[in-house]
Image (cartoon, rainbow, N blue to C red; front, side):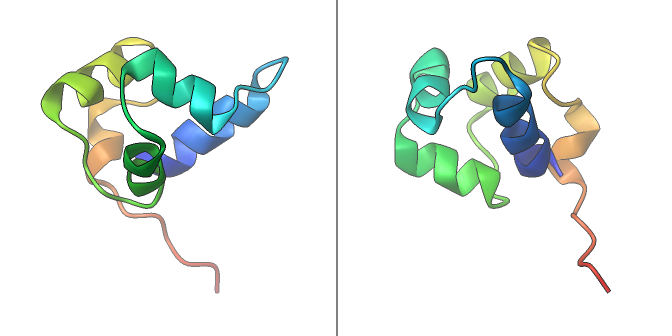
Length: 69
């Protein structure tokens, strides 16, 4: 769920925040961002920083996105 919220948050910003810019904001690589947006957990510092900005909640990191029926 967190990965989906991160992607939605990036696209909702005006101007939109690119993956490269987001990765740079949190000191991660594009590969790490790709993995986070696809369900992998980042290290604790990155998780805390993203949560602190209000992009997602701590619980979002452990919720699965339901597949569309």
